[in-house]
Every structure is written in structure tokens, then in C-alpha cells.
Length: 279
Image 1 (cartoon, rainbow, N blue to C red):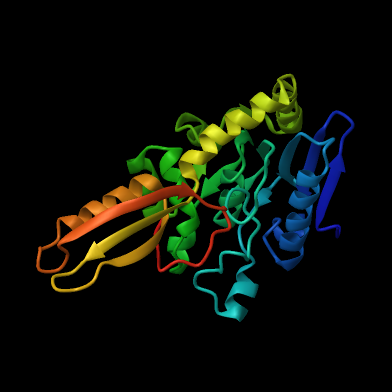
Image 2: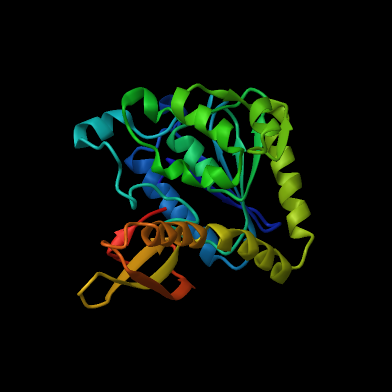
């Protein structure tokens, strides 16, 4: 693992993962992305480590988002799904994670903090989904709808303006708010509270929450007048699948005369190729 991401495997079962490019505001450049992929893999594989804390070096930035210079050179409007290491999406973790946000968490920085199970923030931290300001989309922000009220989420997405750590705490994005010099102590204390519980119970608790947001496969059959039934595979959230299929059913009968849901089952978070993808 390079020095772009530091990994501290503590004797108490806590892994502290630190983004270590403060001169670049810990932006998600190639070296940090590679280091994070390696760090999450090491954490998951080490049976002695039970909780991970993700933080950033310095006191100005947790992570300022993607490396804009790199993205411009590559001509990326929407980065490919496997570009950034995101637990619960393209990385499967069975153990709890805590984001310790020590400064700005903008765009991709918000994304990787959001992907952690819990969040502790310094009082001077700020959060923003800034893609709207540069004409890019932010599909990674979709899970926010499970975390904060819809109208607040809409304002954040449409204005691109940062919110304070205090505001993030008020709307439920942050679990604990602390002074800057007490950030790591607070995160470690929260990790200690988790470690005081049985491992099996911790995993069951995570599964019960993660399963709500986990992609599902929905197989259904639609039939057009005079045609043969056609089986379609959708990938997405179960409740959205129901809405999509209900929408098909409400279409004029000249287009769709019947459909039937056959199977609804969880899939690997990394996913498999499907005919239609929605989220």
C-alpha cells in the first residue's frame, strides 16, 4: 500500500484508514483510489479487525472529491462505476465503518463518507454535492434519500452549496459532532461502543439496514397484443421495481396487456449485466 493511504491496524481491533494527500485536499486521484481499494480489502480480510475508521490528513479536507484535472483529461462526465472504491456498491464489507470527517467532504468526498455506516464530524467540516456547478451528474447521491428528508436532499443537489457540520448533524447525516481536536477520540469511542457488542449481532444489525438499499433482481414477463410473452430482467431497489412495473401496467392497453413478477431476490452489490438498469 502506498503512502497515499495510511493503514493503522490497532491492537484493539480498530483499523484507522487515512487519506494522506493533504496538499491535494485528499482528492480521489489514482494513488488514493488504489490505496483505498487495497485498504478496504485488507480490512475485510483481517479477522482481527472489526471496525474501520476512515479519515483524512490535515485539518482542512476530509476529501475534496475527484481529481478534476484527471477527470478532464479523461473526458469523464460520469465516472465509471468501478473507478471509485465505495463500500456497499463495488466493495462488499461485512464489518462496520465510521467516517471521521475532519474538513470539507465535497462531491466524491461526501460519497465515501456517505458509504460508511456511521459518521462523526468536526465542527468545522462541510459537506457539498458540487457536481451541479460543473455540469456533471451525481448518481452516487441516490442513497441519500434513505438518510435525509427529500426536500433537503433536493436543495443540496440543485444548489451545490455546502452545508455545515452542524446542519449535517441536524438533518441526520452525521451521528456525532465534535470539536476538531476531539474528532479521532470521538470516533474511537464510538468504535469502542460497537466493539463492546457480540460480533454476530453487529453483522445482523448491518445486514438489516444494508438489505433495504441493496440492489435486487426482478424478473417479470410482459405481453404485447398478438405477441409472445417477453421476459425482462431489471436490477434495482425492490420498491422502485414495483413502481416501474405498476407504471407499465398503467400504460395504454394497446402497448402492454399484461405483466407478471416472477422473482425478487437480492444480488451481489457489484451486480451483473442486465437489460434495464434503474436505481
